[in-house]
Image 1 (cartoon, rainbow, N blue to C red):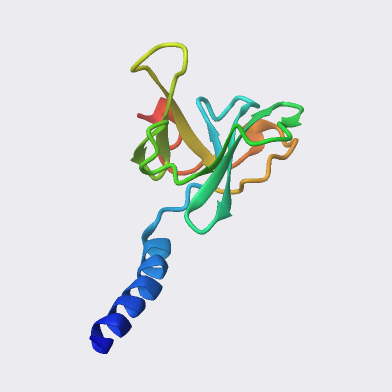
Image 2: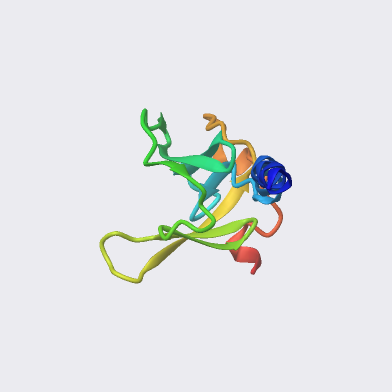
Length: 127
């Protein structure tokens, strides 16, 4: 019986570490159009949780729009790929907005959007 208790405690200890390693990193600047100066800033909050903040040309909101979400598995999101996610609209049932990762850097700078490097496959015009 003691053996099973030790085995169970090892499984509980090891399992979160494996989940953290396999969870994708959604951190970065996500926009519907990478040429625009507004979109979503996704920052790692803790472990496999992310904080999603809406950003404008003048900066980002002071509080996260969606705090502490795993994104993958959250019903507000659909992960299409590492560079594409869909966000559920609140005004139209079963409607989604497509966002593209424009940068892996979650800091939102005042740099001209045209000067920011684009992620591979993040430019909708190339599809």
